[in-house]
Image (tube, rainbow, N blue to C red; front, side, top):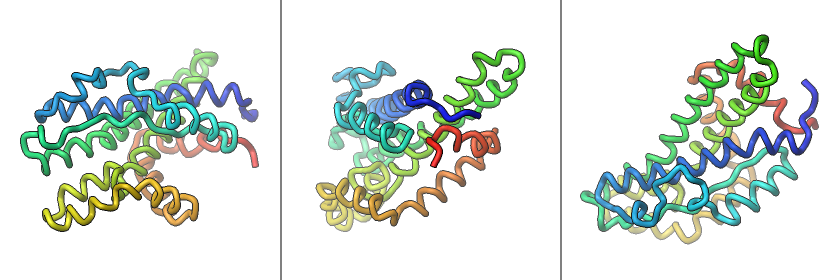
Length: 228
């Protein structure tokens, strides 16, 4: 396969990324609403419309920089506000709300993998449609699994950190929650120093192997990145 141009990579990565971060945040809001906190619904955040979820840095600037320097897009949406005190069982329910984001990313990876199998079956009969869908499906699997893996890291304010905070005994959870103001700095440091890379690779590759069409994902994924 010929190397993709910048415009082609943008076309392939953009839709799966926008859909991944939008549904991730909408899932938080929907679950919170079901568990007693209607804040997200009142703010119009339980929607598949990406506009209310757009974060100028995470949804626009960072993905553009990632595309320019790495050849693929990754980013985040504006976090959905959750009023913990409004939840029926705050500690338990906050863990459920937090788990909804990574959970829906895993579900979307499954949907993209099924679309990948469909596209692969159409390669010879509908080549013009099948090839773009094939590449976009692989991008969708990869983006959703990356978002799932990163968000499950036990670092507040990531979803994994909120789950751990909810599960710890109350006194320990209060101590652990104090990490939150520094959580993003800690995450950036760990990613920059590549300390987390083996862990993320293990989680992502393991999840890929559990999905239908895993061989196709692993075979096509390198073609979505610039050569060298």
